Image (cartoon, rainbow, N blue to C red; front, side, top):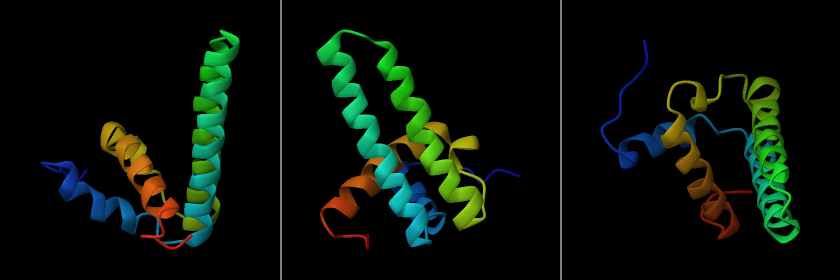
Length: 101
């Protein structure tokens, strides 16, 4: 049964608990960074297929982190919007040192 959340503020602690493994978090960070670079490339080159590559590789890094290091299913499967937001909030929190990298 899927846990329901009434707000992102309720969801984020759950999201962080699903990313307790530092290697998983690092893989998320790498994937998100590459996604940003590829999105910029898509805009710069006007070749918008790079957006598709950005999304695919971003999720690939994250899912490797979950399946092989965290040993859980990505929250994206049950909470896609909150998970997408959570990834970028966690990215910011890692980049600013709020969460251990």
